[in-house]
Length: 173
Image (cartoon, rainbow, N blue to C red; front, side, top):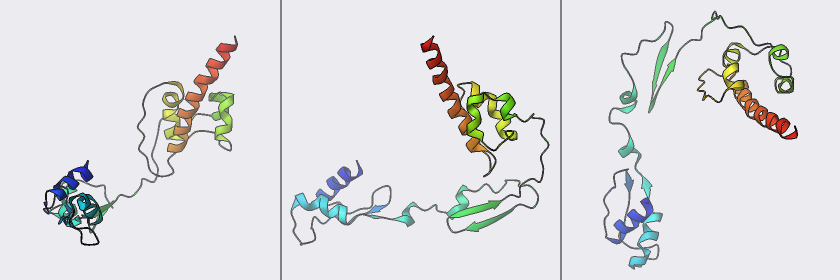
């Protein structure tokens, strides 16, 4: 849609910047200096340039920051050009009241190969296991790297495979 609109602007001889910051030179001339109107679209495409200064926030990265955000102790911010880093230290140990799921005892036998080398699911996996493996509910899991998100995704895939496994068994009966 942008190319069609820009070609129309080029054909009309409009050389202004558009609303998303694309600079154009639309004098209707191609690389050989021809002035034919049918070359306007070709000319526009070859001279299109994204104007990053036009797209930048007026106040830099601070526009997106919340200055009243209370961070935990030992946290710090590093303001960079165009973005801000917020460093929050991880917790050393969190107490939990979740009973870890024993893979051999609590999961169907056909799922064990997916968790080869593991004896139990971790806290996050154990907490989400009933929902991921046994329901059609949507899940949103946000956790740091290494927290176990991939194995929760595996549980949801096993859920789908298990449904087809049950259907095949019922079809044979």
